[in-house]
Length: 326
Image 1: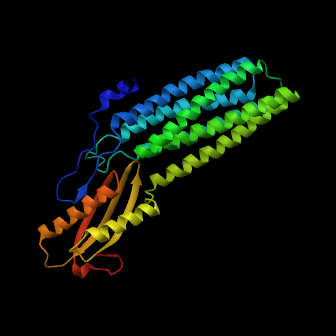
Image 2: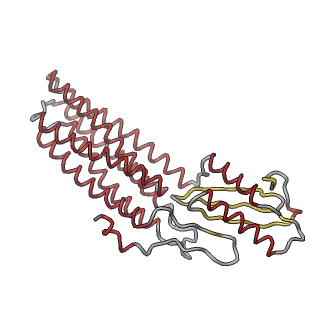
Image 3: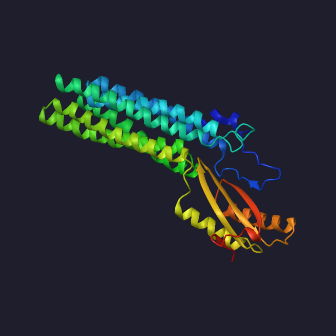
């Protein structure tokens, strides 16, 4: 059913670049409509969980459960931001942004981190008021049951988002999954703590639990922002991927002399690779182009969603410091 929500976006596909430059791209392994459906589904799941958590708070009056409900508001807001970012990131490259819109998802992930921190500040405010004027929560069984159902929904959806986010190489969806998992852990702590509140009769423990939730949320927000900033700063691909890239170039560039100045960067689901390829000075343009085609084809098989730029140079430009072609 949710796939119908985003069916109108099916025509959004990356366009292959053309012209003199040696620049290629590969479409995502995950269909565009599925990625958008996942992002849209997060909004629906967030609204359901939000309603359940506010119901749990209204039943009990617990500050800890109120803090948990506030975090669910953040879940809904960030899910909306993730949907917008995912849709924008999948727009094809154009003259204004020739490398595409893939970094849009990092901005959404930063928004997630900022909203997490805002939620933590609101929770700390409520916790301070609760410590000054503590009250025992009411309707313990009903409140805990409703909150448990909401937590179970979040747990299942967090695993779905993590799997789909990795498959789509989506920073926005991955950040959303991490936030939900943090929410699950926080809620489990709150539920366990509330049981102690009812058993011991110590009302201040309710507010103390809210403080712990807020600190956990602050740590989660910092982690999301830190990771997203790395993407905005054109962080290189992981070491194992770089090793694969170098091995592919070394074994598929038969006829060339060396490859040097190899650079990589990650932008959302896209991996960008550029390097200089040294060939014999007497080699024809056609032969050099054929070598480049072979390298590109092998790289696309080894690395998904990749754009490659190769600068061909004559042998007098060799640096003897790059990859020696096998």
